[in-house]
Length: 219
Image: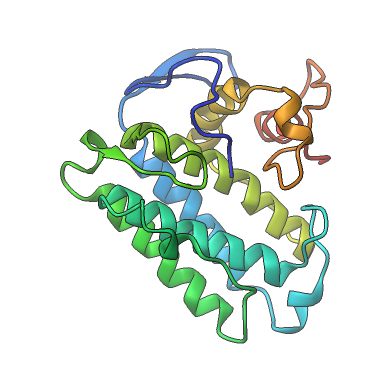
């Protein structure tokens, strides 16, 4: 999970994106892009088998069962937050994935997409108790936290399963500035931190590689 509320710059309704030609664009509503990113993870998870749940993942100490349990719970938690119920910790409770992991994951993914898509959802403040109980966050900002997390977790699942992973250009263009805004500070060294310290990004890096390196993954 991204460190909510700790971005270097505000991301508040319009988002500067850079395409492969370094042309800046503005994306005023990230919900279609968010939905595309989340649904891409559903397609990946659907290709896993029960036997695959024992595989190690790029997330230190987690097998695929633990990772998918976390991803499913985060969908539920963010969906509850978007509906105004994020304060209830029961929505965030995770358990390792079981035999029906793919159906449970697909259901939770559809739920979070629907919750963010509801009329007026992006206008309300939301509770994200796994980040802090001391404040709320604008829902449109919570959407960016969830988006960057699932672009990276999509790669985690694909790498675990030895599958190709090619998020769409719009997804990558929207996610790069979000990844750049996540602070690279001592919090990344804490136990259970969502992201490891950033790694050097070569000038020739493609957008996905940049995102992964900025967030401590080793593509």
